[in-house]
Length: 279
Image (cartoon, rainbow, N blue to C red; front, side, top):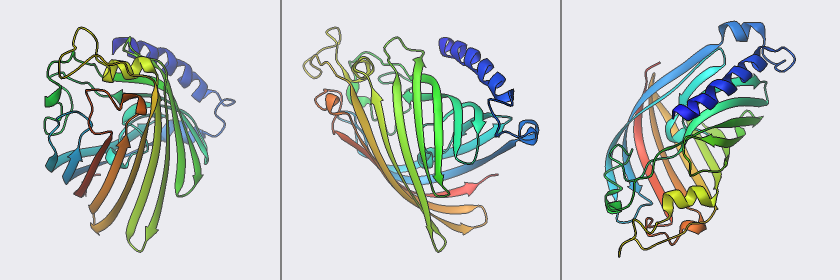
């Protein structure tokens, strides 16, 4: 993580300079540079059904607490919009923005840890992986670009070559999101594609000689693309209260289909939740 923060400091210094350069960021007005700040925070309680990608993971159905937030100040921002987010939670610096394009330097967790005590899991989903070597979190720093196609749809690209792990190559991700309204109900859909190299996928889904067993035979994973699709709906119940529901599917790369660490090939989660808008 310290290595990544070193990259962040160097690139943030450069992007702050570019953001203050009137030639490089003509769309930012002086008022925005001096006074731009905004944000929200929401708390939700959901009943969720979750079918994990990991082998021997129990099927989960139960309550999940979630906190979603977004805050920005003079170009710097931190965001975690939960399942509704167009992309991954993280933090960064926006150095250019106009009505149709936005460019950020962005830090985000693109792969969660596996087989460690502090893994962020649901209902002990990694219990079936006992015996494999731990895999660390992959935090990435890169360039994020967002194109606002119209008032209801957007396309977002993340190119993240910098990682605090040795087992990595450039991570590339693409998201497309669209919203529409019918009476008081708001609908949204998101499609995503994320590319990782064989070095990255083998680190997370391969099995080395040192950890191989009868349950986990040696396996070499190749490069591949993870695909995702999500559909959701929200309905305002009262001031500051919202009812939400969504379903999301994640299809793993074909290069890890036969990994002894995963089963099934498609991960899914569905939920219905009550959301309270804190501010």
